[in-house]
Structure formats: structure tokens, C-alpha cells
Image (cartoon, rainbow, N blue to C red; front, side, top):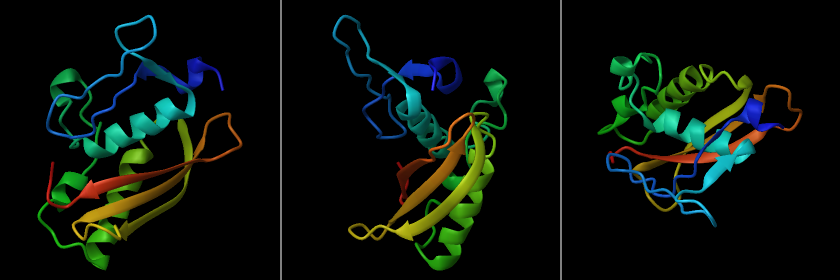
Length: 141
């Protein structure tokens, strides 16, 4: 898939949200670039972890997700279903995603406060789905 469709961005390595993200230095650059499906996976993760409305002052009021509304809630079946709904709402706004194939929110086996979001999406002009798992802590950042 050409970068014109998938896009290109800085490769981020520090997923401790609420703090500055850390970039990765490339061989001959100050920062490494990311492209292809890896870039889209990073973009979807950032969209899910960004509170919806955070970028309103920048002209992007619908960017982000409502997952943050679940912080402080119990990791139970009801809240995992709500998380799935919030994820679908956010992912369907990503222009490179043609359809959402599956979303499953399950309790992390090691950390009971974490929901693992299993996501499978079909990408425009691509036959192979993109699959990723995004952990989300109900305790916040």
C-alpha cells in the first residue's frame, strides 16, 4: 500500500499517555518515520487514547474517543460492551478504515483494571485486515 494512502508520521515509542510522547531516532534523522500498516495501527491507538473533543481548538472536534469516560469504572461485562461501542464510534471516523470487522473488549489476564481492546479493520484498497490489540486502563494515565 503506498504511503499516499497509509500516510507517514513520526514513530512514537512512549505510550504513557498524559505525558509527552517520545520519538525514536532514525539512522540519519533526528526522528524515525513510520508508514504502512504500522502507521495506521499507531494512528488508531492515538485516536482511541485521545479524549474526544481534545482537538476542538485545532479544528478537529470529533477526533478521539469516549473511552476516557470509563476511567474509574469497574472492569465488568457492561463497561467492556460500552468500551466496544466507544471504540467503534472512534474507529469509524478514521478515513483509511473502510469497515470494522471485529471489536472485542476483554479483561487483561494480568491486570484486572485493564481492558484489552482487540480490533480488526478493513483498510481502503487493501484485502488483508489490520489487527491490533490496544490496552486501556480504567485507572487512567
